[in-house]
Length: 334
Image 1 (cartoon, rainbow, N blue to C red):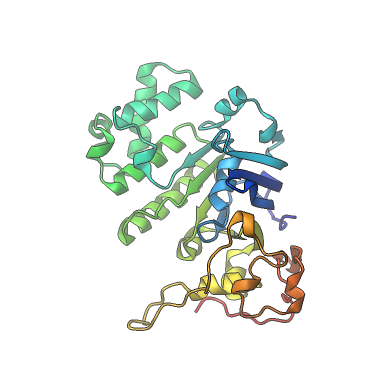
Image 2: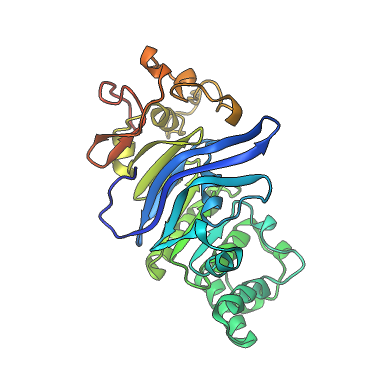
């Protein structure tokens, strides 16, 4: 069940269930997740480590590790194409061309043995079928587009010669080189200092506007969400627990987990005060609670939480997976 949007839907994830092989057998790590991303829209996919957000992003492009992860059921539709029904060859034509992904750590995605410009040009040649010279010119063009100075010279350098911020910019340049319809950005600012984080976020927002693409921003950082996202999908223990527009989420959260995430955000003027935290930890995929998955960590839990709560409409366009969504007054961002 996805929240309605005013834009034309580009990506629709419906009842996605993903399993991973563990010592306990095949364990469900994403359990019936549904959401959408509209044309030219930036949607945040938020949650702690282990919530299933990165696995959801990888599932869209068929990048789950073979033999270890599998999509058990559900659908992932881009426009009118079911991506889960495509062959590996057909998926390769989609990756980087219609849908591109920026990963959390660029040094694991950029090949240290090849020049940065050559790696970008390779993607352009693969999807656009242009000459080496034209692909090289496009690589320089996108490096300049993402704000790398002396782009023609830097295109001849290797990844280790780039700073962390520059490597992330190079990854974004590679991702947008073929002007994809959808960009999936998986924790693109996690390893960067605060100043560079702000620059990368500004760059992503600028690229989205300039190229007219949609963005699915996978992050644990609600500060990042507040900066650029229009809608937010909050995940916990493999399930969507809340979904609404960004302003509504920060002002009027409807799930205790979201309230906990907002309270844990560092605040200006709170120097010397202990940071708030959510007690406990995310359950393991093979040891999920029978009822509400957040109940063991929730200060509002009651007997009714022993039953699994459905994802329901708490108010217009605002979805919540909480039995008490209509009786709790939860605190928004301070």
